[in-house]
Structures are given as C-alpha cells and as structure tokens.
Image (cartoon, rainbow, N blue to C red; front, side, top):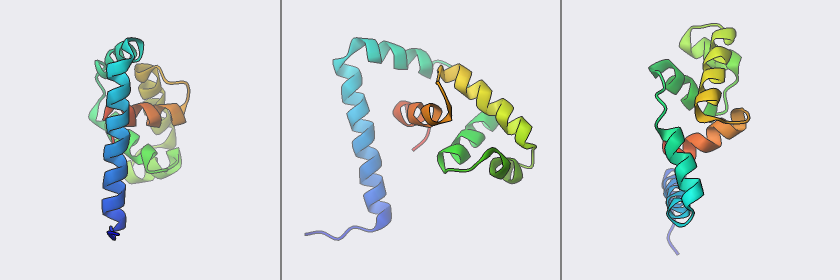
Length: 104
C-alpha cells in the first residue's frame, strides 16, 4: 500500500475526473458539441478570478472582500459567467468549469 499526501490524492482525483469527462465527450457527440459551444465563450480576468473563488466555496461577500469590490459586483460577474456557460445556477457553473478545464 502506498501512502499519499492530501495534495497527491487531490491531484489524482482531479486527473481522474478530467479523464472521465474527456472520455464522455469522445463517446457522446451531443455532450461534446454542447461542451465545445461553452468553451468558445470568452471570460474576463475578473470573471475568472471570481470563478476560482466560487469554486473554493466562497460567498459573494467573501469574494468581494478578497477582490476589493462590492458583493453586488461579484453577483454581476456570476450572472455573466452563468449566462456565458448556459448554467442553471452557481453549482452548475462550478461543475461546468471543472468539466471544461477552466478550473481545477
């Protein structure tokens, strides 16, 4: 048995998830087409920063404090991201971002 650090376990987990979604894309043309259409959207640097913090579990207030902006501005970014990715909610945004490799 091999003992792995939490960082190594997290890395292997991320690789396995990424590989799963890539294989799914290759086997289902409809999923592949949908994901490709989402990848083609362009996000701003601030949207990407907010997305990374959202994936870390931060609230709009938390993200606003880190980025030194209001929570309303964070919500504006989140709505833009959600619209660009055609996501149903913030949880869906994070799931899609992981699948698309925008965050890890």
